[in-house]
Length: 212
Ligand code: ADP
Ligand code: ADP
Ligand code: ZN
Image 1: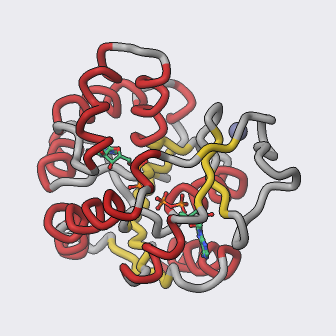
Image 2: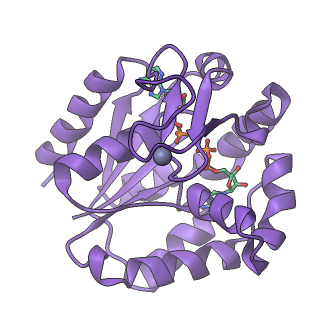
């Protein structure tokens, strides 16, 4: 089963992807995490991506498609995968179709912009594994430490309020059209992302089951 998690920055894609990995036993592929890892490791990809990310802009499609194509071709993706944060442009979605990457369900996690701006100030991200936490809505067991890997929890540079507003603009101008794209293909499920993490997760699993 191949899934896409679509949604504005901060809608809860990463949080839901982690829960789905445990329930569906398929890997999550987060382009954002892969890019942040590339930046941390000082690779060519990281050097090319950093400026776009810091400004809240999208990284060019060719860079993204290269890393996604390589990742989904690995053996652990044979039984399915969860794409978190990709595709983000029509060109990325069309390229996945052209390359024969079959998508079964596209879950759009929906949250108002005003709520997202509030949420992002409390987001903390594991510097080692990318897991996402929130100081009040989803705190780690030990403050500042990742439950999963013991890594240090950090504040993402692009979670500064003005960069979040820029990223929301980019979402509405460039990514939101993907709802039409996948809606026309009959693969879109809409889920309310403003409810609790557990309730949103239950609705995602229900939506997947209902759409055969
Ligand atoms: P969020 O979902 O909170 O916006 P991500 O970790 O998915 O965060 O993305 C962080 C940044 O990484 C984006 O603002 C963008 O610069 C870059 N990025 C991630 N995925 C893509 C993608 N599919 N296409 C273009 N840029 C991407
Ligand atoms: P995305 O991957 O879409 O950018 P995240 O999963 O990182 O979003 O979630 C953004 C922030 O909101 C994190 O701090 C996360 O803990 C928190 N969060 C996620 N889902 C919910 C929810 N349903 N209610 C409240 N906070 C949430
Ligand atoms: Zn971690």
